[in-house]
Length: 307
Image (tube, rainbow, N blue to C red):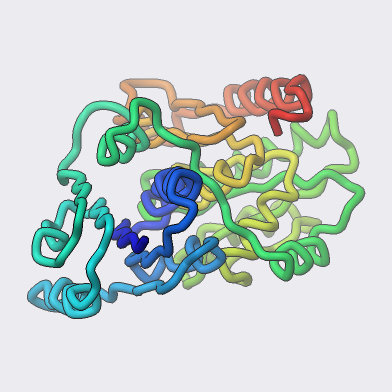
């Protein structure tokens, strides 16, 4: 059995779609998978079980990337073709069954839209596929012993970024009850991510700097070693949630009801004002601290088999 899975360009959407792939891996144990995604998201799928081919779709002028993808897929008779981009490309290739998610924004969390594409009543939780070498690399950077608190002070839109000094103040407040805690600052590659994270690193000189330094599977492995992750609405936030690490998302001008972190142990805290329109500086440190402490308490009270 061969399954084609066309998923997102953005990291966060790609991570959320891993729940569908995990469902298909469990319900189609004989299937081999071809995944098509954008370059930023490729690392999400590189350690996926039964991955036969990973097609990285580089955007081209005049939408010619879709023609390239069609050429890569048309020679195979697919048992199932899943198109989460709503492109209609799967209508032009041979497939016994097709599942196409229509485009555009709509009410509800993104995970429920993805689940509906396969006719699932409840959205499956995202997963993070991590190899043994990735875990070993993360363990060398974040060794056993002291608790690590992950911070995600970057985002793909400036207005989604919580002020850097508040990330510093939040970690310092949490560290007062966890005196051995160490901060780990995460971010993607590139100058913009480095610039957004720099004030947090400067304010926490003992922090571990993982901004743009690791491939995505190792980032996931490092996130999995944290006792807590607090971050802006971003792909890293969704990646953290997919590892099972308690994840707190910070929201202001974007809708938490659409893109809240989705995982085994997650929560969101919203800036004061109209949901989805409030500025990030309307989110006080005290609100984030209370939400983080509540999430940590939930995690500590959870049964071991729920982790």
